[in-house]
Image 1 (cartoon, rainbow, N blue to C red):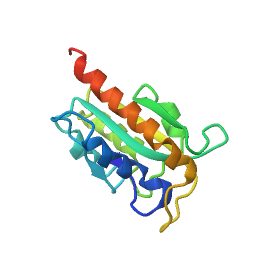
Image 2 (spheres, helix red, strand yellow):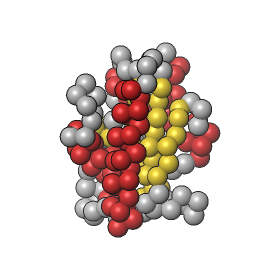
Image 3 (cartoon, rainbow, N blue to C red):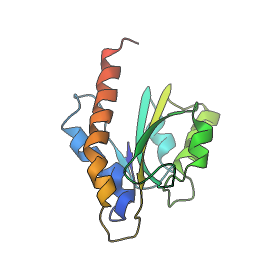
Image 4 (cartoon, rainbow, N blue to C red):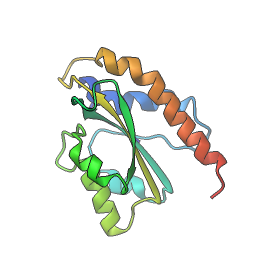
Length: 153
């Protein structure tokens, strides 16, 4: 699931990554996009074994623009809570994942690919650093999904 806000600079990265993945992943892998933050996450969790989320995070000194990181929820809960995922909504992704956990609909595996961005203003495009890292993130996501499809349950 690619998350983000269209036309809001680096915050659109999750949405922008979803489209090229459609042509790169095997049939049967469902790719969705969402612009509502964590509000729809409970619905998207229904019947899902593995959920992979892609979202932007605010760049910091330790996580500069253009870098990306892979997190596992709930194992990396503390790291995710200290990151500034770029949710502009009342219910963010981490809070929605915690709610899914409490109500018992959290998928067996949840991964979050966070891409650090530096510009989030409406009407601007991706920052050069984020644009330069898109191919690497796409390759990593494709490899992650294909590896999981080859691994017996």
